[in-house]
Image 1 (cartoon, one colour):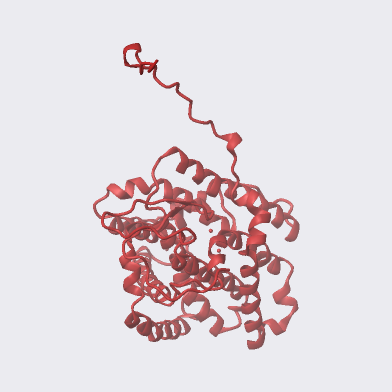
Image 2 (cartoon, rainbow, N blue to C red):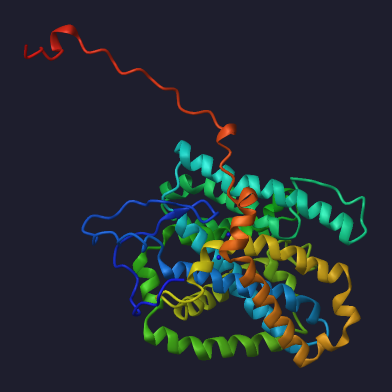
Length: 393
């Protein structure tokens, strides 16, 4: 994976851990540390901060897809595109890792992983394949569950990452190990495209980082000093991206290819992977510092970000298949770029709303009780005769 009356701004709960989620918006309770305050009252079970962060991140994802056709003719659009791609998916993945802290191999959690991640992947991978056949006039486009197309790679990655969660809980230095794995993946061209493993491995450190975070870490980036410092940091990132735009391929930010496949040497892959990881962490912290911690008009949309993510892809790809950016030259003007940005944000916002979620819940959150065997009902042990209560009569 997107109205209640506004409440006064409040900081994140001091010790209560966020609930885990299966990727579809449904939650599972995490353990509450000793000495933590009482859980919030009914209606406050979801922390507004995370729903706000997910909504803002999905808006940036949609805007990024809308900017992509504009980057060839606009250096400013390319700079903005590269800056946003540095942190929007890492932020999403960190939140996904944070929500996975309580995941284990318990039966009900495995079932939610299947219904909330695996089933939507199968349905949307198939739907995207048929859509490309029709919209791109490509009847030979294959349907392959081993080769995720466009947006569905994230569901594959989330499924694999979450299954490995118990392993990361027993590793002594999980984040350094995940970074090493990402670096090695970036210089391994033989990994291939199956299950988009390059992305799974190169984005892995952000998921493992999310597993390691605690509420106090998010409170650190919410400090006023961090919020103020984030302004010049973002400005510097934009200036750097503007300089790098004609000199660097934006494919580095997709993390889907090895260094050799990008036409460079293995040691450049190591340097770029570590440098991009560091830049992403700085910009993610800056992004989180500006995410509201109170309830806002878009908080309710944070529970529907998976809907917005998967559904907006049809329009994002369709706009290119149907040549909209080629037929309407004014879209490449500054005014057109602003219009495209606002339209993308508006569309993905609409796709996160409760009516859309209700309409597509059958695909995103199927119950599938018919597909899972219920635990065998064991009869209660018989009470020995001598232990049975005697009748008062």
